[in-house]
Length: 286
Picture 1 (cartoon, rainbow, N blue to C red):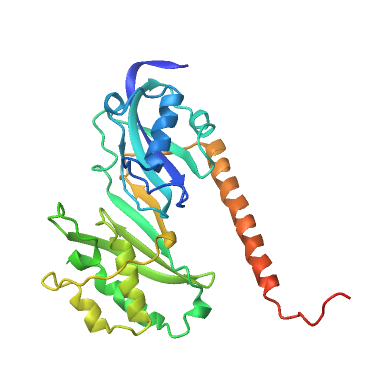
Picture 2 (cartoon, rainbow, N blue to C red; picture 1 turned 120 degrees about the vertical axis):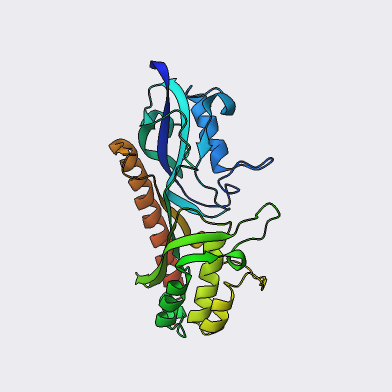
């Protein structure tokens, strides 16, 4: 074990794939989460002894089935950081791929300047035949700026302030799927999934643009279910020009290799079921 003479705080970028395996990212009593796995691995590899002394903190919280490519956390250690040493003990669906040194008092959560999320609508475009994509883009445009998003978040007792500055809300079509990009310094719980839900309702003409705009009026409380969590990805977290991450190439290869393998496996499954649906039952072997 390589020890430094003094303690150092490291800020790390990591990915994880949302599934039923983890009950979201944040530690929860009685449930396995992404944070639990990372903390246990850091302990196993002698980077930290406990949560308090390492002052480990995570920059974001995501629900069950939500994925991340550029989530971040930071911790204090007196051991030289070797990412592949940690990754070797992590499951393939979690991995750290970039890091940098930051001041001891640095907070990965509070010092974040911008959070970037992507949302991929699970249904392919050819199943959304009534979608008016111009209305989708108009709804996105109406959300940008300084607004009260009380009707676009999960209501929580401790949540007092629901006003946020949404810097980017955009939509495009990629590989026959609608993809959204949202950027803000901070988001409320389920805010993105609820924005997507209502934006798509505008695009499918289930509500009017005027009704959509009324959701930004805090005096009216509207209750509804958010969009499917499987389409949400925490894409990146930015800390400004003074924080420069160093990519560990072996760790990056590990991540990309895992993504490629999953793409092949799921692509094969898709083709399998497409083949099984072919209507050629009359051409049976004798």
